[in-house]
Every structure is written in structure tokens, then in C-alpha cells.
Length: 321
Ligand SMILES: NC(=O)c1ccc[n+]([C@@H]2O[C@H](COP(=O)([O-])OP(=O)(O)OC[C@H]3O[C@@H](n4cnc5c(N)ncnc54)[C@H](O)[C@@H]3O)[C@@H](O)[C@H]2O)c1
Image (cartoon, rainbow, N blue to C red):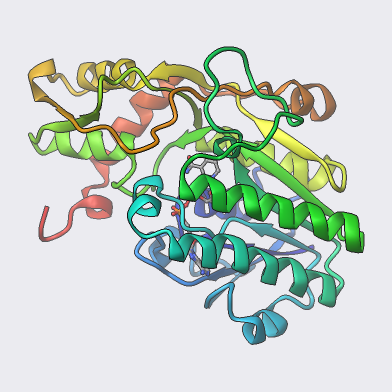
């Protein structure tokens, strides 16, 4: 089997590729992986096993249709991670989010259709549902995205659905909650707070810190993705969750405790405009249909991630930091 993985020089895609090439998943022992990545500020070749015999890296843009038409043919499946992924950046510079996340996804789907690729896994996010005060979202909940990032992902989900309904392309869509784990860019909340505390710097907490997010270890997300790729159904959406719902204040408290720091290291900063209050998803479909269950507890996951950033300063220290 040959899998093309877009955006795999980033956080989640690189974890997925490392695990596939390590044979960690059923049916992944002989898989050949091609990575297509533009290497934006968020992508690094060093995140990937360059020397692996079943690995090929192509640097390029998913919006480049000529390139897609050269790279896509010959693959059995596409796992599509490539995206602009940071909500704060989408507030100040939304154009690149629409270009990569919407137009780029449409180009990937169209190239897959033209090349006769068997299936496409479109990796999306629970943020497409918007904020929920109480209860949980199912896959049938309305799409009510609030940030430009979430709107671009919701748009790409609808384009993916249309390629299935209109052309019969086998597309599966996943919507996962917030991920954490090794190799995450230090602009994101957990690595940002960990690396700042490791270097004795204050951490910025948005607003009153009451916003609630569900946190899932990247390893659980990637196992779920491979389940959907190999056992899921065409045209279906699968929520992936099962992590821990924590307010940003609670998460901050846990990170302070793990790093032996006090609340005087916290600075309250002006809230993000349109900041969603709470995300919570119902993932019973993937649990019942595909036998998914997360393995990492938030306690063991956070401890491991703090240790990883402590042990890998080369990943996050820049001359300026
Ligand atoms: N991080 C999360 O908590 C989370 C949760 C649910 C879903 N997701 C989704 O998972 C996917 C991966 O997220 P991540 O956190 O690993 O992101 P990331 O920002 O760490 O990595 C994104 C990767 O995409 C590449 N890329 C960006 N634009 C590209 C383009 N035009 N052409 C080719 N490559 C391009 C970047 O170079 C980078 O390697 C995204 O689609 C995101 O929406 C993320």
C-alpha cells in the first residue's frame, strides 16, 4: 500500500508517519509513505524519518495542481493533514487559511479523483461545530464555526462531502478535539506554557481562563485516524475525542504543578476575539463502530510531554528565545 500524507512535517502528521513507518498499526507493516509538505513556519523535515527505506519526501504546496498531478498518481490513499492550524494567526491573517485549507483541500480531492485514488482521509477539527455551553456535539450537529480557522476547516469538510456525494470519491472525515504531545509547535498553548516555564518566563492566560477544551494525546488521535482509514466507511464523519475536558485555568494549574512553578508566573492577557467558550464532543460512533478508545490519561500524557520538551531543547529553542 502507498499512502500520500499531506502536511506531515507538522505536529500530528509527523507523529502519524513515524508510527506508520514503525509498523505500530495493524496493516501498516509494508506501507510506503510519501509526504507532501510546503514546509511553512510550522513544518520541519527533521520531524520525519528521512532515511527510512519506505519514505519519500516532496516539498511543495497542495495548491499547486501541476505538482499534485505528478505526485498523487500511484497512491492508494491520501491522509490529508496539510493546513494552516493556528487560530490566533487566522484572526490577523485569514487569507492563507482560506487558500490552503479550502482551495488546497479542493485541489487534493480533485487530484485524487482524477488519479483514481481509492480513499481520502480528511483530517478536520471539532472547532467546526463552534462553541457549546452544555452537552456534546455529535457528527450530525450543525457546523457553526466562529474563528476564520474553524470556518476554513468547516468549508473544507463541506467540499470533501461534496466530492463524495457528487463524484462518489471515497472520502472519510474526522473531527478531533485539541491535541497535545511531542513535536507540537511552541506557538500552541501547552508547548508555549511549558517552554516559557522551563526558561523562567511568565505565561499568558487568555481572559479569565474559564474556556474549556478537550485535550487528547496525539498518539490516540493518530491511532483513531488509522482506524478510520482502514476500517471506516466512505462518506462518513467520525468525531474523535475522549480526552479530558479542562478549563484553560485548570490546564495552567496542572502545568505549573508539573514544572514546580506558582501562579505568580501567570499573566492575564486580553481575551482572543470570538474566543469559543467550550468544546465537547460525543465520540460514541467511532468507539462503537471501530472499537476506538484512547489510551493516554491526561496525567501521564502531560507528564510525558513536559519531559519531552525538557529533553528536546533543540526543537524549541531559537537564538531569540
Ligand atoms: N493541533 C490540533 O489540536 C488539531 C486538532 C484537530 C484537528 N487538527 C487538524 O490536523 C491537521 C494537522 O494539524 P497540526 O496541528 O499538525 O498542524 P501544524 O501546523 O503543526 O502542521 C501543518 C503542516 O502543514 C504544512 N502546510 C501548511 N500549508 C501547506 C500547503 N499549502 N501545502 C503543503 N503543506 C502545507 C505545514 O508546513 C505543516 O507541516 C490540520 O488539518 C488541523 O486542522 C489539529
